[in-house]
Image (cartoon, rainbow, N blue to C red; front, side, top):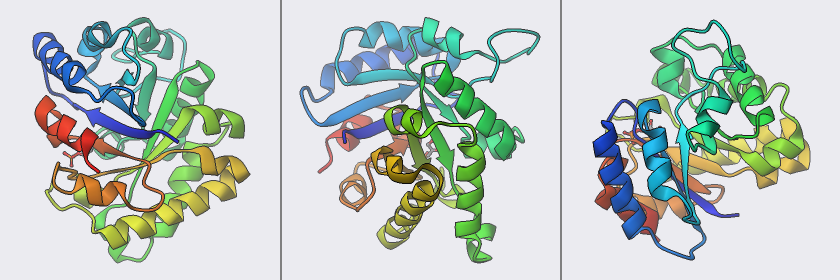
Length: 250
Ligand code: 13P
């Protein structure tokens, strides 16, 4: 399985800034390795980044969100076909900021995931517990619910070939508080087991990424853990230099 190193730029960067950062990523990206880099820019910059990455093996672009319909009266939303038309081959679903700031339900995340996969995109489903949920001892219950509902209607073969799951504990996002290796190891083993309950043997083929305060100096230790098949990076992905250092961490 290729290691996926993904940059979530969230609501950052104009088109010109995105172009510059994408060019620096393309110039510095390791060639011919076992790693694939994916950048999730804001919608306005997807086509810009796609143009910079065009024709480069191992570099891909994705949308940060998608709406589960082909077209229609959905003001503010974007369809899988529109993302693909802009050059995206990936999309994020269920990011905790969409769940918590925008109020997305597990059911809506599931509809988005299934629809985007059906439309031919690769989908990175994000899951993760809040600090309160962790302290209440409900980690397993929360991840099981997010995975079951997030993958409802997803065929095992589509999941095995085009889905990834990003475990991002909410308390570690943007806080500088990276989950400890023991916590990541445990949560990823749990995620793999829960995925097997849902998908059967296909679960083994689904890359599991860790996200939450990943930095150049903790990336190697995280990537060395069992069941960590990649990283999803927010703040430290905004500068090409630190994103590339993470992409090369071993
Ligand atoms: P940070 O790396 O800024 O903690 O963000 C993580 C994240 O939410 C990536 O999707």
